[in-house]
Image 1 (cartoon, rainbow, N blue to C red):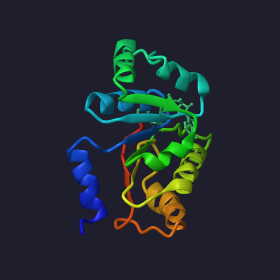
Image 2 (image 1 turned 30 degrees about the vertical axis):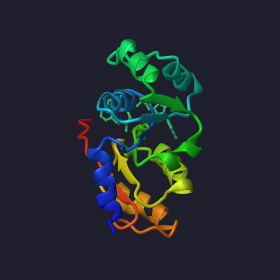
Image 3 (image 1 turned 90 degrees about the horizontal axis):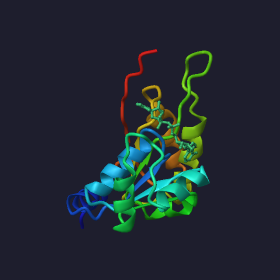
Image 4 (image 1 turned 120 degrees about the vertical axis):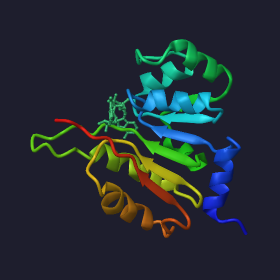
Length: 171
Ligand SMILES: NC(=O)c1ccc[n+]([C@@H]2O[C@H](COP(=O)([O-])OP(=O)(O)OC[C@H]3O[C@@H](n4cnc5c(N)ncnc54)[C@H](O)[C@@H]3O)[C@@H](O)[C@H]2O)c1
């Protein structure tokens, strides 16, 4: 029987993988639009209802992302946005793009990541890949996300997959 990893790779190759991006800001909106352009059905999960509504009307609110691109993808059924996080269960790949503002101590505030991860944990299922794109300290996936996801009984690298993108912040 094909492993969860092989099944996911096959879905990515065939563009059948469903992509969910949590946080539709300066990072998340361009990302979800690019996945839509790449042929994937992409969904943005936002806490701000006004942003979700704008996307579903086919309007961009980020200068780098042309409204025409958003409108075209929404019309084609490749892009939508929602404040209902129950739809995370239908995603094959979930990318976290929530804010991580620096505290006075210069440590990143990971509370937004925790909130997003709790939503993922609630519906985590075999075959899902979670990618942490928000800027944070190395080890956030192993020390914070993995223990939360392991509580579901699913096993890392067998049932679910976890990656952290590194972005260097010069401050
Ligand atoms: N903007 C950049 O150039 C840039 C570059 C590299 C890395 N980053 C990192 O990417 C991350 C996102 O940055 P950004 O500039 O896109 O931030 P942003 O503030 O523009 O967007 C974040 C979005 O997340 C939403 N959000 C907040 N909490 C949420 C939650 N629990 N669930 C769903 N959505 C939620 C907000 O409403 C907002 O729309 C940060 O960690 C930042 O450091 C940003």
